Length: 123
Image (cartoon, rainbow, N blue to C red; front, top):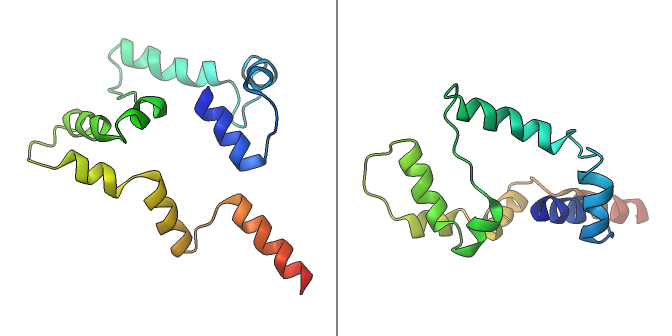
């Protein structure tokens, strides 16, 4: 839920505390895509029943070692079967670098678009 709070904080400029977010968003099923619990429960149940194969990764865990362990888990999950440098892959895919690439490629965040529109409105 912490990563969701940070996401909404950054994407929409939410200024409330985590406690308020948890009470007013999480517990009332007010996520932009509906109930967090129902959405994840469907995948968890299907995985436990052997209907689908799912690899669950948590953003908070990936931040601990900059995603190196996650790269290894993904490779194992997809049965990559070849040598690779998890550290190099994680470094190339870190959020800072991906954001720089998306900004360079013209894919911008909501805030960037809003600022651009405000600046253009001043002309």
